[in-house]
Length: 245
Length: 328
Image (cartoon, rainbow over all chains, first blue to last red; front, top):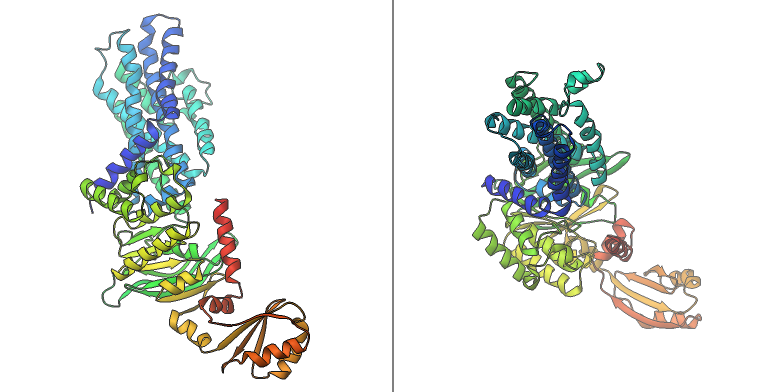
C-alpha cells in the first residue's frame, strides 16, 4: 500500500478544510501580525529595539499559530467521529498523527516569517544566522504542535482544548525569555522556565537574530528534540489508551 | 482471508467493559469467507461494541479475534487493509463535497488519483448521488449522508465489510436500493457482517444470524434452521372486539390440541402441529359472546424467532432505533 498517498491526502485535506478558514487565519496569521505591530510600534525605544523584540514575536507567532489548530483537526474530528475513519484506515498510527500534525507544523513555520518580513522593512537583517533561525522556527513549530496534540488528545471537547492550551500559552509569554531574560524573573519561577520547550526555542532565536543566547545552540537543539519526541510519544500513548478503548 | 479454514471473522470469548457497564461478555462466533452474517439484538445489546472490537476501534478485555486469518487480539488495527466499515452514524467530513469525501477515503487506502476519482464517480452513480457530487456533505439530507457513508465504506472494495445499521433512517426506495447493493456485494464474494434492527431485512439477506442479548450471543444458526421449527407450526390470528381474555380457560378446555397466546387484549394467536380449522373456533367464540372481526392464517417469520429468543417485540426495537436516529 502506498502510505505516502494517505499521508499527503490527510495533510492536504486538513489544510483545505481547516487551516485556511477564518478562525485559524485570525489566530494563526492576524493575531501574530497584530502582536508584531503592537510590539514594534509601542516598544518605545525606536527601531533599534526591533531586533531584541523579534525573537519573542516570532516564537509567539509560531506558538499561537500551531497550538490553536490541533483542537480543530484532532479534538473536533474525534468529537464528530470522523477521526474513526482515519483509525480504520490501514495507516500506522505514528504516520497518521504525523500527517495530522504536519500541516500545523508547516503553518507554524510560515507564521514565523510574518514578523520577519515586517521587520525586514524596518531594520537590517543581514546579520541574522538564517540556518539557526529556520532550525529554531521548525523545532518550535514541531514542539508547539506536539504540545497542542498532547492537549487535544487529553480532552474531549474543542472548547476544553482551547482553554487548556491557554494555560500553557499565556504563562509561556512571560516565563520563556521571549521579551526579557529569564534571569529577570523571580528566583522561584526560573526553574519553571527550563521545563518549558519555548525557552530553548526562544534562546535559539535570540542566538540567530541577536547573536546572544544563554545556552549553547546544540543544547537548545537537543532539549527541543527531546521535548518533541516525548510529547509525540505521550500523545500516541494517550490515543492508544484513551481512544482505542 | 484465511484460506486454510475458510473463516473470515473469528471471535472467541470476547468481553468488553466500559466503567461499570459490561458491554459484551463471552461473545463467540465465526463468519465464513463470503458469508453474509447478521448480528441482531435490541438496543444496548452490544452490537456496536462488538463491531468496534472487531474493527480495531476498541480493545477487548478478554477473548481472541482473528480477521482474515490475522490475529488482531493484541494488535487491534492489524487487519485494517482487509476491512471496510460503515458505522451506525454518518461520519464523513461536513466541509468536503460528496466527491471529495469519497476521493479522500480512497486515498486513505493508497489509491492513486485517477483510480480514486473513477471509483468515486462510479459509487456516486450507483448511489444516485451524482447530481449532489459537488455539494458539501454537511448540506446533504440524512438519507444522502447515509448513502455516501456506505459508499465510503466500500470505496476500496474490502474483502470483509462491517455494516452497522445501514438502512436505518433512510427512505424506503433508498433502503431497497441498498439491500440490492448488499446482495450484489455478497454475490461478488465480499464477506459481510451486518447489524440491523429490521429483522425482515436480515431474514431476506443473511445466510446465518447471531442473536445477541445483554452482551451475550444466545443463538447462531442459518436463517433456514432458525425459522424451520416455527414454520412447521400452523398458526392463526383471531381478532375479537370483546371478551377474549375471559374465554382463555374455556378455549383451552374445548380445544386441548391448540395453543393460545394472547398478543394484545383483542388479539389471540392460535398455534398447532396440525392445520387449524377456523370454523369451530369462530363459532365457539361467537357462541360465548365474542365478536370476531378477523381470523387469518399467519406465516411465522424470523421476527417471531427473535421475539421468542429475546422476549423483545421487533416493533419496539425498530421504533427505539428510529427514535434515536431522529434525535441525532
